[in-house]
Length: 95
Length: 115
Image (cartoon, rainbow over all chains, first blue to last red; front, side, top):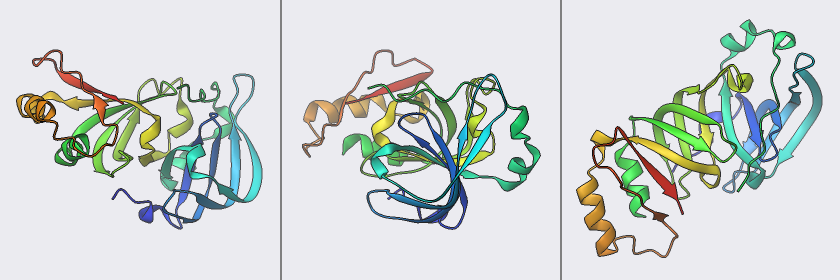
């Protein structure tokens, strides 16, 4: 079973079906891969300005909205200045 | 179930997963489950300049339902065995397993099309 156990209490990036990216600490999950994030923030990417972080607080994300969960490497994260990053938002899923 | 077994034999191999949002992620296959959710290690996103979103992500969990293709190392897949198993109908569970395309046995990589 490819489980999410290793991600609990770690800082993770969730990518959602509509292309949104949310970072936060994984507080918990269940067998349907619903995920609870604490101290979560949405990262809004645009070509006009650097990455904007919108605080969301405690969030429960439904498993079927999640396309990817990535563990954030704190060392690399520290070295990246989000305000300098210009990028299109991630494209939404198209079936 | 057949493809689940195939993936289990491919753990620790380098694979490229193409998602239905056109993102391609290359990494080491760490594990897979019955939904074909995939865990990858040491990942790299192709076209990192266009997709810097995952720059600080080293390992990830990908939901099986959003995978379009998985490119596999051809030399680690016994295509003859696969073809035989497919003809025998070893994918006996009714799970919609796949449209299996084995077009070119000498190809560098094989692509599995998710059903």
